Length: 279
Image: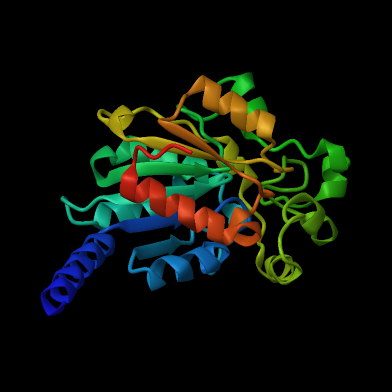
């Protein structure tokens, strides 16, 4: 019995050591921040995984004014700087939500050897960014079901009132209906207090040149079945256009880190540890 206990303990320690080497980097969507992942981060760290929740430029607690950001490269610089700073032999699992998918794709093209896997959650997954009209149709949220843009968004005009808006955020009165309809009320309340205008001009300018080796990085897509922001049909078009290695579906709204955290956590862990897992 004593010897069996020792063997089991040794196996457990080996497993924990393996887990501790897996590093997740979680990327928020437009208007969000690293804070969006607080439930997932807690679950992962309790389980022994290493987790980094970045704030992109002008998001979360990043001090820059998002209204002045008009270049995607500028907006995504915190992620690029982070990957640049990693040791040459360290790999991470990049996880992008919503517009965070653009950041993941950009980073994968630039640092393919540092990305073990790219995971998209209800996210914009476009191989080269917004190049065609179809890319725009597939990857940019269409919230016209909820009214005209002026009725849905609070917009900021960093280049002057005669120019197109540089940043926007969904009006507080509509956030729960559009983004968090299946999420706990306390989470949508928290989000209403923390969301910031997102740099829409910067995101719309995203264009990517595929880096050597980028196609070898496995991509996983997690569909959000009741998404009112990046609608399921948009997700399906992007999946069809640039097929990932695996596709999974969560019965969630646009924010599964709030509405289905345990399911999302379990799926991320399975994908990370098994890679080839199929449901």
